[in-house]
Length: 351
Image (cartoon, rainbow, N blue to C red; front, top):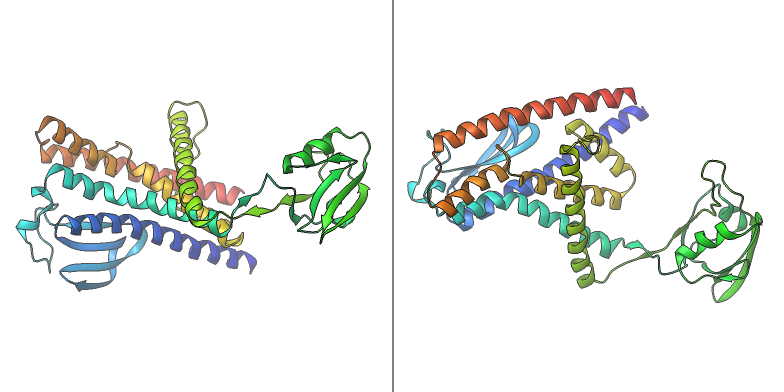
């Protein structure tokens, strides 16, 4: 029964994550197209056969059988209209200026990146980060010396064996310098100082003294959360792209997750709580946005390369050849997804 519940949690979490990522991404394309007065024939979530559809304001809104990806179908992207389309050639994607087409193509990935920034800001403002400047205990871990000695969340560590502590890092550093397992820790609780005494032995596996406490959390005010969230996303983007480059260069082992791997990670994040799930959703959107901007065929970044070339050389690359290049890239992308998915399944069953 527990395995079934775990499976259902993973599937529901996966659908929520994929749904948000795809709708935000395709929504970016859609809103950019509407802004530049390009006709959108269809906004689809998923791939394969249509399960549900409704036409509104000339756009067919559809949900398809396989909840992997989605698309926005615009006038001018296909030679033949689909049943129900009412083409307006004056609103074709192909007749728009290069910079307008560039905005429409880049809009999806940019919306994923913006969502990652907003979720990070929400995390900083609503949940906060570990407050390493304070010695206030945020959590006490069961089965560790701190719990046996009577430490409580909210206690502020004042000193350890007479050594005054001013920052969180001082707790760990001081514990590693003492000679005896018997430790006397003074904490401030409700305005009074209390001495907690007990043994904190050196761990057999860790090789260090672990008291078993976690730092408190500092929540950022609105504007600080927004600006710090932007800084966090920038640093994470640099790390993602650096890691990708090192994988390509063969300096580190490739570690890529497909749909099955993402489902497993989404389920793990959901089981750990709301804020862990928000963190995971932010990281997935940032990865999706950045990877879509890579200059590879079949990705948005590949299409942007052709548009930038058109803007620089003032000459459009032959559409026939561009489509062929993207088709080859798309086939390679599907093959990669299939390979990664197989590896995810094998890893899941072997673990």
